[in-house]
Image (cartoon, rainbow, N blue to C red; front, top):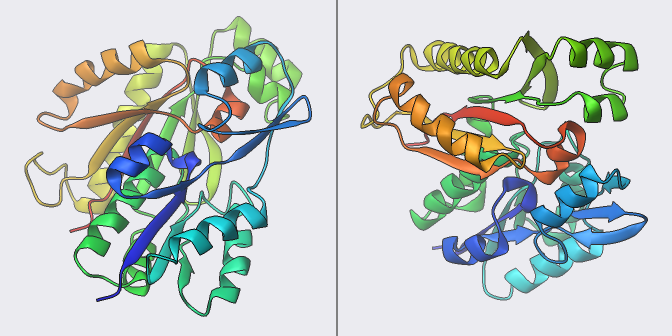
Length: 291
């Protein structure tokens, strides 16, 4: 039986410590602050990131260097027969394309999956892949399963401030000014490889309601109805946030009425997303269960 290692990157939200506990390998994503490179969860923390972001430090996201990627792969292949690599969505970064190019030199021992996930949905893909590997699936078989279900997932994100969307050019200064005056809470959607505007809400309560209704509609469209929590095809639900742990935990308690019996995982949104939306956001996600 082929011994398959699962590799993802820190956009999954999986820390180095958690990765060791899960038996998964995590490539740290690099960031540049004041032209100095930092590695997520290695040379800087979430707390340091938000301190810099709120202090208007210029922060730029980047890809891992080819050398750092192949160094990790080479190290893993000393112990494993194959690698199944799950980078962040190709629509949000060039990381995936670079990994695919590098994998060409590994004679089929490294398979890169472009199943277009990020943050908690990327985390779930890594967990699903590890489970499939433990069942004895080959890297190619796992890749086929992940690709067949790649569109069976959505993330809805309420943005707390328009400051960072304006800074990144995603909204005009005029639109941002009006939105701040009206205290609008934009809701964004990540589906497949796209990050798009979904709706505008007047307040946090309305934004939460929008996201819950959207998730329920997506699940109904995909599965026909919301399965009972103990059903074998009950989807995975998760909350993500940017520096908003207390609100996220409170919302999980509120969601117990909307999704009775469901366990809802909470994790910070990836820093690559946080760069563009700033602190204070809340997100709700669903991912189809692989059985």
